[in-house]
Image (cartoon, rainbow, N blue to C red; front, side, top):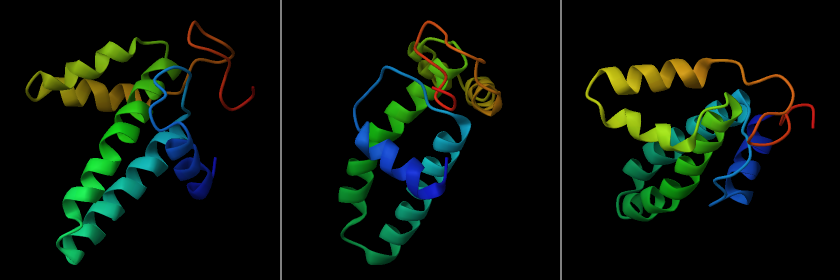
Amino acid sequence: MTFIESIQSGFRNYATFDGRSPRSEYWYFHLFAFLAMMASILTGPFIFAIALGLVLPTLAVNVRRLHDIDKSGWFIFIACIPLVGPIVLLVWHCQRGTLGGNRFGPDPLFG
């Protein structure tokens, strides 16, 4: 999935918490969100609007990424555990998704 496709998919599935997201969609969307936040810091008054507009799609991409490795989306709350939680979540997000279908849907790369 390319950078543009990832951004389009992230916003097309703005509040879709079911299904799966491949690693490329997850990382490209987070890169876009980071760049948008950095640009909004430079523009000043738009920072709140941009941050607010990115919260829900970023959360949805995170949940769908967990689904891709066959984990429940509720595991997103593991990030609330200081120090250890975000590290565990980062390792999970770096893992390759389940080959073929899983309980959350078909393989996003191969249909």
